[in-house]
Length: 445
Image (cartoon, rainbow, N blue to C red; front, side):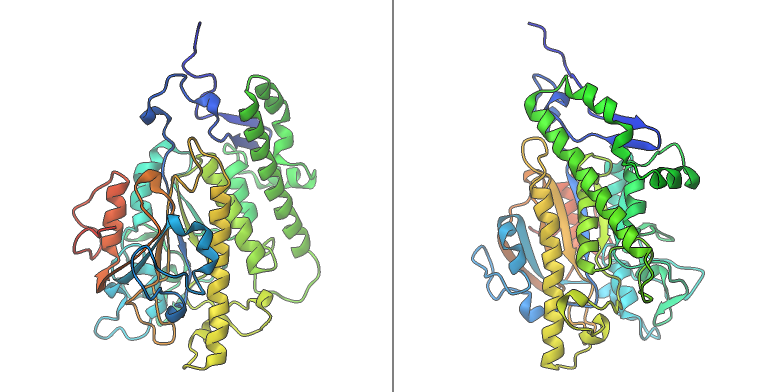
């Protein structure tokens, strides 16, 4: 009996006019007698960030260890309890103002969250922060992917100038810094993300993309013949996986087109760019689906997702009130305002749960994408009313390819640098470092 090493190359793309579609991991891509190392799925690293602080009394469990209770804000994550670590006591003291700096806690919160490095206060030229942990990881994991990393946002990043207390908008427009002077641009338009993943990588001609959109054809229409030809050589399990994956692409594309159609109507002025879904919930789910597709195809293994910018004054219409978010967080202990902020906090974890559901439902080797993921969720401010940078809300989610034992609430000494967490995660990813940001040692998790 002859057994071929691989029937389908691991990095397989279907290409047609204006479209390049990467395939997910199929059984046919694995060696017939592969070792565990050869068959192992790659680990993915993600960050999901929420702004303006959280009502910590409704976030932090009262008890530690495996028996902790799910608080109201954590409750949407209950199905993923065993793949979740709640970490208390972490801080970013580098977000505190230095002598003479004054205001700017929101800018410093975003700039330090993944770096542990105090940003230089400047309104324009001369911005300087620190290399962020996502980009440190992307430098290594990106060697094997088409995109080194993917930076996603739900707010427009088109504002320039001074955004918070005399700090450049560069500090609030992104979480991710490739170098101390090179912030990574975040993308909030689903169409742009979709085309980055599935558009023609050899062409940046906007007329060609527009022509394709005007023909109202899916990117999949250009690769249908190749899909049909490939499916004949796949087993039933792989055919089902391929069909499910392609249907996911088509559904995401349909939703993007619907959002674009709605955005082109004559409506009252809205504080959102053209082509972005009308509600936070729709937008967040669409971006979560795009992130899932990016990981499923191994187009990238590192994503950074800003669910909101610091000082965000979004109105969450789907919650039934018209109060702007940031002013609500300065509640001055008003119970009515606090209750509304809690509703927003819960909506954020509901959207995180949606992402986790999509990852859990997506097969990946011997498990799911969630099994092979390591996701940090949190905020650079705890109490939004007082702008505190201690006792930060931080979760670590996913299985990390078997390196993370979830289902626990761990409390550390108050003031423990959050950079210590990044040292621990880097070690689990096989990238140990002697220090990171303002770290004082590797966190035990």
